Length: 479
Ligand code: FAD
Ligand code: NAD
Image (cartoon, rainbow, N blue to C red; front, side, top):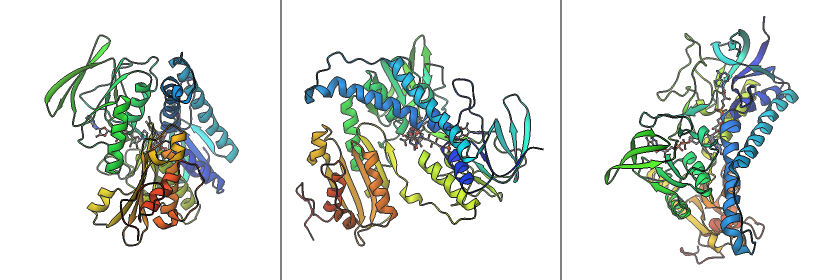
């Protein structure tokens, strides 16, 4: 008879491993089941985020950004570096080393916190049982008072662009190119497309992005999205909106792509093609036949606000449930569920989840856009401050971008913050904390910011909400 646990978590991505650690910290006997086999043939923890997502993509973004700076921007600062070149193989080894360290670190954290690690594919066999199939095919049944499904997501594949190893790839393949493709096609100008398109554009690829929608980054405030599009275009990303791919075909060492746009049918040829048109929940094999855990119409596991499924004692968190597919959202849900199982009161504020696109400059936002406010009939006032007027941005040689604060016209409560600029991903935490504490724009305006910092742009944007910005001419009259 296998062990009985208070909690069994299926999946050790940021949703699952965080839930398991929290549950163990709260005194619950906890196990976490993971099946992901890493490059070295052993089971690895960390899920999409650590293995093929957030972390490896940021390693490549940072390396490629430093390369561009050294090649094109250092000269202006007086630094002579005439022979800068990129060794792609070394960049990839650096990325792989980080992934190995971090995934290994999770195993260490499991040991330190007393989480039992179970290797194999977990399946909810009943409301209180998980069946695990090991890589040797052997199955073991475990009993659990509570089960947390954190099975994550996988890339969406579309019929016109079937994957062809090394040539037509998803985001995972795009993290493994061993040399810079001369002509790179990217299907989908969403977050992955912009991040991975940027990596290879910086290293010298001619990047063409084919995006089906008319709008660029529709979830970002329109003025910030427009500015971002302009900046990225200047960097060389050829973003074609309203472009619908109809087919792709590998011919020798080229990929021929057909698409339609406002001018009719088009054809173009690339050396590599990345398909990044979204991700779908991964629930294959996670729920045994006859176990009635409801899925929603898009295939996500159906949960309430506190991540309970319809089956008592069974919870689901992260990418396999509704809401944004973000590592920090998955982790916060994992913590909430562990707290609930341990008998604590816990809830999550889905209105204050930050988003960051790690292009250069970064794009970051939290809360609503001006357009959403209008659509919802909320009267808002807005303050914006350009980094071009920031002393620190000038010193950093990073003056592109704007910080924007959106506040309720009547109560002054901050409803949204949208930033495009260097370190926007760090700065957005101010908006998250302000909104979490129900702050007004005046609260931020009355706060003392360190000088010189990029964050002063947020301060000035908050001041500008009521026409009080100091370091630019105010458009609106002071009250
Ligand atoms: P996952 O990380 O997908 O983990 C699920 C785990 O469950 C996997 O390890 C899987 O093997 C395991 N599993 C599934 N089924 C079973 C089973 N039956 N038995 C045992 N184990 C199972 N998000 C951000 O917030 N910031 C970023 O910068 C960012 N960058 C990204 C870049 C890329 C290229 C990609 C692809 C994604 C990125 N994301 C980013 C999204 C982020 O990776 C996901 O939102 C996050 O990993 C979701 O966590 P999760 O725990 O729900 O699922
Ligand atoms: P996405 O939803 O961000 O973007 C997909 C894009 O593809 C959309 O703009 C969509 O209109 C377009 N598209 C869809 N079908 C198309 C078609 N047939 N032809 C052309 N364009 C098409 O999805 P993604 O970029 O694949 O990322 C997946 C998820 O991973 C996202 O939800 C995101 O939250 C997460 N992620 C987050 C980060 C981050 O936080 N920095 C980074 C990478 C990924």
